[in-house]
Image (cartoon, rainbow, N blue to C red; front, side):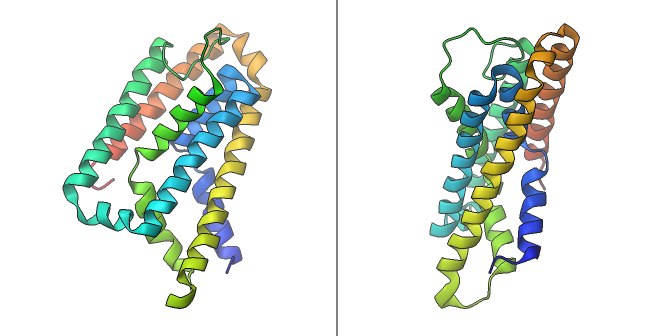
Length: 204
C-alpha cells in the first residue's frame, strides 16, 4: 500500500514551499524551536481536518459547489494578504525580532491551523492525489485512505518540524543582523502575498 512512488511523491509535495512551510520557517526564525513546533502542529492539524473532510465528502462538495469553494478560497486569500501586510509592519503573528509579546504557543499553533485550513484545495488535493495509489477495491478503500492519508499527515509534521528546527538553529545570527531581519521580513511578506494571489487565480 505504501509504495516507494507514493512516499516519494508525498515527500516532494510536502517539502515544496507553501504557506505552512513559510509560516513554520518564519516562526522558527522569529521565536525559536518550541514556537516552531507549535506552528508545525497547527499547520499539520489543518491537514488532518482536510483529510477528514475528504473522507466524509466535503472535498467533493467544495469541488461541485462553486459558491462554497469561492467563499473559502477568498477567505484564504484575504488572510494571506493580511499576513503579508502585518509581516511587513512586523505587528502580526509572523515576526522577525526577539518576541517580547505575550503570544502563547496556542496562538502560534492556531495561526498555523487557520493558514492551512483556509485553503480548500488541500481537501481537493487528497481527493485527486490519494486515489492514484489505491487498489480500487471498495472494501479496502477506507483503510487505504486512512493509511495513505495518515502517512501524508505524519510526513507533513516531520518535514515542518525539520524546517522549523533548521530555522531556529540560525535564529541568533539572523536576529543579530538588522539587514537579515529586514530581508527575511520582506521575503516572507512577498511569499504570503504571492500565495494569496496564486490562490485567487481562477485556475489556481
